[in-house]
Length: 557
Ligand SMILES: [Zn+2]
Image: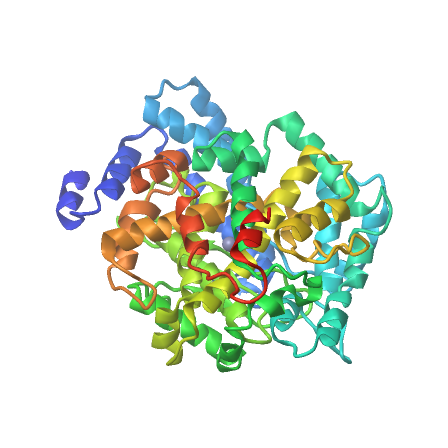
């Protein structure tokens, strides 16, 4: 029969083979095919809506929308009918996964029409808005204001501003640049206890309490830690950073510049035009040919485009006419300027793309796993660009290791700070966000207190998905663990390693949602996730020689 014939052809793809046989023999087969069609239509529609092309596989948004709605309606009927069917344990689990998938349809940023972002953003002032429309309104503010920051007579995107905060030569220019976020901040976080962000965080906290869908609890589950330990993990990482860096207080606009001094010389060599070439070369050396995998990149700036970098499916991977048809992924970002920060971001998004292409599982489980794992995995490769070995191979020379790592962890610990910020805001949603942020950044990052500035409001995720930053903040702990485990198994991969993609796919990526992420991680690491690897990485940063004595340094929080 077909299954045994394919066994010969597909030796080595055991999980895929058994998934396929299970599907062919399953009473779920018809519903599952429909589920795969619905996912494909959903992602095709999202791709068209994101632009720039308004047609995919010969169909426009209207046609894909009709297809998706038809599939969804049929699927809902089929899934309902299966309630009456006696199913084995595996099929019951797959059915549950499909029900959940249909209920939580993937959402992807769509490009906004001219004037749409501005009108939506203005709507955030309406105190009656519910959580979801308020989130969408504030997301629109990030497009309208965040992607159009007025600075030195021109208009720049938020990502460019974050890169320039590392590069600009004088503190006055950097201060002016951070203050260019003021229109965005006024829309999000005016000095008003009932401002849009404060309403959003209260609604999000209430929603999470009512539905038990706290991202903090989910993140804790992924790493296998009790939820009450998460705060301690973040604080341990931040405190270690605080001891590793120069403790002289630094203004918020100078924070990035101070800690990226070593890598600044590399920025001019990584022009916007080289970003794609560099990420492709690196992944090719890792055994993941982005072109052969069909990864699509949409990196140009254009009006109405999603204001954040993200990766998503164009279509899922599935069996078609007896052959495995791989997933296709796309990366969207706003690259108008190069630099190491921007490169790191694109290598991260390509990490998602290769993850998507590696999944081999039945449609019911066609996803990537828990959010924290997804984000942590994407950083496994993006952290490498900070390593001297990477820089030597791809740029021809490297900067001092300690300085390069300090530059990398400048952003990593800011993510941990944002994770802690959201954890505390969601726990006590009536808190003043500026005060919470000031406390964290002055205590651990040695940033001069500026409680009058909502300079925490730099990340789209804070309004798009309140609580999501934990996946980067706590995700860094897992990233360090995954990097360490991988290095022990196949050797260094900072300057490429042809075994990396095959080995990582086999041990980590191919399962999709067919295995619970905590189980997968435990098996991969051979132990629970721990902060040890990340703390060891931070220990590679040499403390500043000048200034404080060792005893004073130890006494810092
Ligand atoms: Zn990501």
